Image (tube, rainbow over all chains, first blue to last red; front, side, top):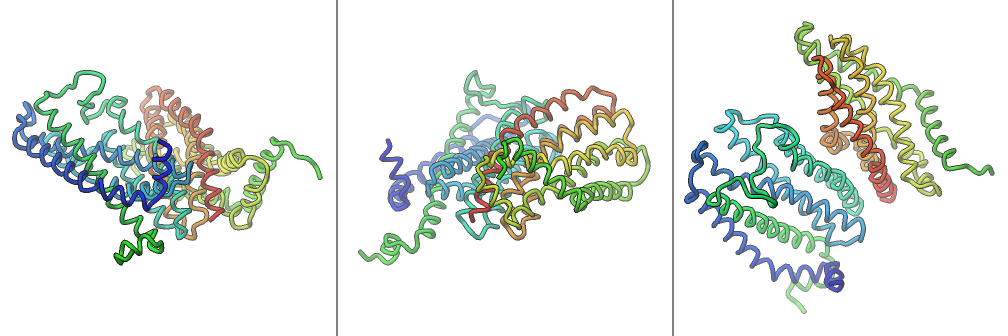
Length: 246
Length: 228
């Protein structure tokens, strides 16, 4: 266990091992995403009230969940970096931010597209929508803060502090639909009790969610690998990798 | 040399900050003038009719007060960073956590407290019903204290940067939003004759969370800003 933890501190080891995982992860995530999308968009039954427009759920819910999960990933990586000064955690934190911001943006756009046929408006200032918008702002703030430091070591520490502070927003998003009586429907997938969604609709949704989490991991690994190469460009192993010399 | 007790050091720090603010006057007056002037923009933009301004007044007052504290928070650590006092604080045996708390408290005394006390004046000009005045002053009293804590985190993160001003608003405003929601809703409830103690309780809870936790982030941010 501890040797694994220590090995994680070595960018070279991570680069080699992630190169082995990457093809698998890529195939699994694309397969799951395609499976979930085809099942959800073509074969799942239409909704009793919303008809076919509800099918955007198979994109909207996974992106929203991974957008939040991505923020937690970023903040946890930031905490690990602050506490143990682990280089790899710093890279993970920095690379999770743009991916998470993009997913949050997608969640907002798909939510808006879904809102038009169901609520009759592209945008409503509902508790959950607003708090997801705040999540987007938090991501953007972290990225802007990182870019404005010239000393990247200080930038990473500053972003770690900021992302930990912004973590307060995550429970607000999660429970906003229960705390405030809002237009947005409450959670339909529950871990503790029976889901309020029929299994024929729920199963493709779960597959899409798992698929998007895998996709997030894939993109994160690709980003991290290129970031590592750039940071370690002066070391011997990267030069050997680039020139093919031994 | 005279030995200083911990409370003596903290009280001295607060007293020094207050003295600097009172002597230079700008730190004290500028947020208040900003508050008044931006408040004046709204009747000019929206129209002076009481029927239209009155319902909007709670939101306008809170947004303007929030922007005034945002602008003021940039200066919390600025002069101390420029003249090297901040490095002395980091070197001193007193915990940076407590020093950060004292600095933030002094800053609230300079910016937030006068703002809360002066808010009824602008509120009257914006046709806020008189019944909502206590809610406005109380919610600003609690709310600006939370805003000062959050603003101190942003100020500590950006104090080492040459152009920190706009960046500070980008990273601090998302964290300000929950305070604005409950603050403005307390005033709105009071204006409509509804009870507002619930919203004040939430603001108090935010303050109770921010006071012990925010100085942790401020201290970490000050260390990295001075180190770089």
